[in-house]
Image (cartoon, rainbow, N blue to C red; front, side, top):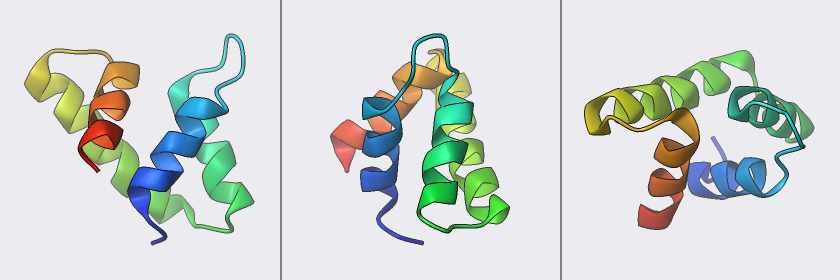
Length: 68
C-alpha cells in the first residue's frame, strides 16, 4: 500500500462538510486506485486505536498521522 500516513492525511484534509471519515478515506483510496482490502485494513487499525484510546474515529486518525 502507498504510504498510509499520507493517505490518512489526505483523507483528513479533504474531509467534506457533513462527511464521515470512513467515506472520505474510501474516496481517497479509490482515487489512488487501491482496493477495498486496503480500506478494511486501515479502518480496522483506526477503529482499534479509537477503542483502545477511548477517542472517536477522527481523533484516532489524527493521532495516527501525527506519529507517522
